[in-house]
Length: 400
Image 1 (cartoon, rainbow, N blue to C red):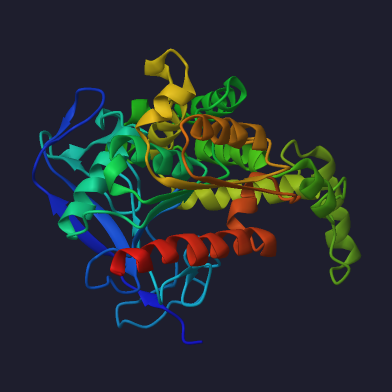
Image 2: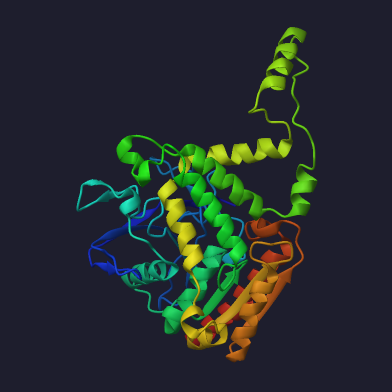
């Protein structure tokens, strides 16, 4: 099959956006990609909401300056979305949008503050899940779409999906919430705070204005990513993939003298990488620190922490979800201890208490939280079936 090549688009909004904090963004830009074709009555649109370190590049291959495919540039959910895939872009018009405060093109801390002509840095206003949904709704308006066939997301993207059904209940026909939760528990908030402290205490952080100072808090970003990555994997996967295996210290092709020098250096080095899991985590941390922005990390993890639609209803999730009218598919994974199946079942219970149409799949998978990004056939089949038998059937009914 010919690869899908996509080019990002940018939409500017000059109408001020009032945030949940009371701060106002006078203007902003959102970067997005689309896949497939919008049908004549504009009823087949599916919005994809991204998680912490993802972006608008949901599927397909990125285009270079000549419009040619960049090898190995697949979108983060390319196994899920595309022609003939679970979310079939031969049938649905899929929209991936980069959230405010991100570092992949949409207005965020690395952009210039119009009031100072300096990078926003730490002065970029606090954003919430609700703010992202409001900004996404403006983009959907600008695309001429009144109602979405579905909103879909995993992890933090699932929280945005849930928020869509509460903020704009008449604009969402279906909500697909994967590996998510109605709020973070104390353990999750604790992990986020440790990661944030790693960044903030980096000497190169410069009170969040590191771009002005010409520095980047890479050490803090590395540690934050390492902490996060541990929570995305299950114990089973870590033991199967790495166990207690040691990283090879020497290369058989090298001279005895070179090996002896390396052994001696290793013996006295406090930075030595001894276990394979150490090497893996440092690799992930190094890679992350080269492309992600520290202030963005702080903003997005705070948005995760703050999300709690039941708060204004005295903690009653059932009351909070009373505004929703969409049909729901929820998916969880047995070894996901960061967003456990119990959290998805909380949502299912509250939705059923409101007599809403709910389908639920709990996948027995060993991969931990990362399972929502992987190629589990049962998981992909559950999503495919829901889109083919429920969403597509609804669209046919509307057309008739």
